[in-house]
Image 1 (tube, rainbow, N blue to C red):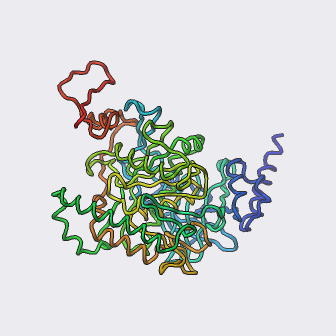
Image 2 (spheres, helix red, strand yellow):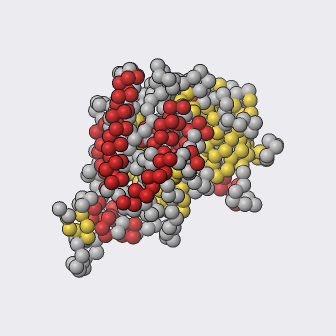
Image 3 (cartoon, rainbow, N blue to C red):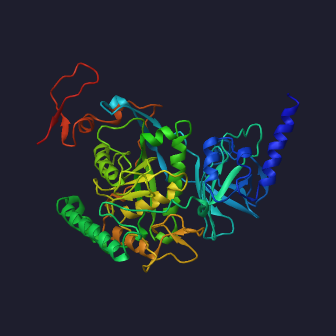
Length: 519
């Protein structure tokens, strides 16, 4: 039996080499994809290619098949080293140059895992990010309009955006790269995704998709949300003395001012269970690295950084958070809930500007049953503590486009409908188009989206985005909940946002806390 092992290894490699570079019609799925879930996912794609990426030097010369950034960094001469990879796709070879995206998270970014219904802060555990140093962004060599966002640990996972196409790449799972150094990857176009992943919507003041309303109706709904924001902003400025001196900034163009969207990511129990045997943290960071790259596209016209400050993984349902198929109700519940768990004060290293709920529920707008809705958001809600939130259905790597689209709504962007002045041209698809999958042309921000976000920022509605994430690194592998949540914050979490610590009472039993409600 031992004599057969080399032959079997050679046979597997030989099969991979034969199908590499050719778009497949699923005849090799059972041979190549040992992971049942990945095999099922690949069968849902219209087409794909199996590729064997390699590491190369800056000239494109072959170095080796080792792709793991952690191993490469140990031998690196410096932290800012640019990594180079060659990815065969069809009849061409794409060479990418990438550098670590150090603005995606900081040393203060924390992962919180919650159990039970959070009856006590001891129901949470905290830790550092484990996937630091894995997430890169860059470009395709010879393509000035290209973008690349990949995770480079345990293979290459992410997005390659060329002047003509957009590709997703991910490793073939359960491959033993120690035995066979050539790690096979699947590469597929965005247009290969299932056709039913097509509808984006936004709520509250819901922006309806083109199947249900004409462009006039969409405009009315968006305008109503903008008018509500105008009234809120006026009241906010009048009652916040610290905001008044900044009114002159409305005359200053936002394009020259770098913004930081400090982001909380909440993963619901359904999604947590779905990825229980996989690296959920790295998957979420990989998707968010793609989102950050989409917001770095020059067509947006503004310097916007997506910065993750906190990831919360829910293992169980929470008492005051109701997540169902009904996207509107789930969003309203989440927006209210995320406000209660935010840390007061923008100087707190884990205070968030926007909250994202990632779910494996098949959500649907206005109905508590599955349908093709992928996401909802509060229009122009960014920097409003009760409305800076959205909900996004996990669909794999394409989740990045849903999140970017919904954050766009948080910035006050509306849909780029086909019968509007900002309909997608033939050579590209706009991020704010109501349909996620239309063709294989690269994504970009429309002139309307650029105008909307620029106006939003010029009016100082993005006032919470001015501060760069602060660093306050804790020194232990796990952080006590009592340090993460001070006494006042624990009272707000356990009772209501009006609760505070009742001082003057001596507590002898560990785990007890007395709070007073403010009326």
